[in-house]
Length: 141
Image (cartoon, rainbow, N blue to C red):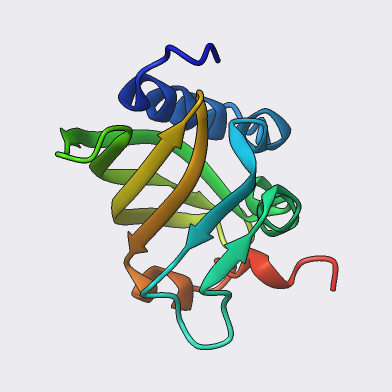
């Protein structure tokens, strides 16, 4: 994405890439030193991923476990901090292993610099991770 892309446009593009299951392109939207945090992550799940490589490793198996169909109720709030937005949304799809519904609410605080995501604090509902088949963090270990 061009450096002039707004944080909101970049984030909307990132959602389209997740729906397309194009994880390498999604990771490509991150700065090399980007940080992805999950303050409400369940025990034994990572709470902080530092660097594009760590983010890529974490997301590598995501589409094998969670088949996202759409993001609804996406609301982007601009902040007083240039390059920072707050996003509210709902992700809807299915858990691949059990074919059961996936429905999660998110609030994310996202910072963008030079057209890349530099940080994201993703406040997602940890109860969703308790569903059978939802834990993609242990794939391939």
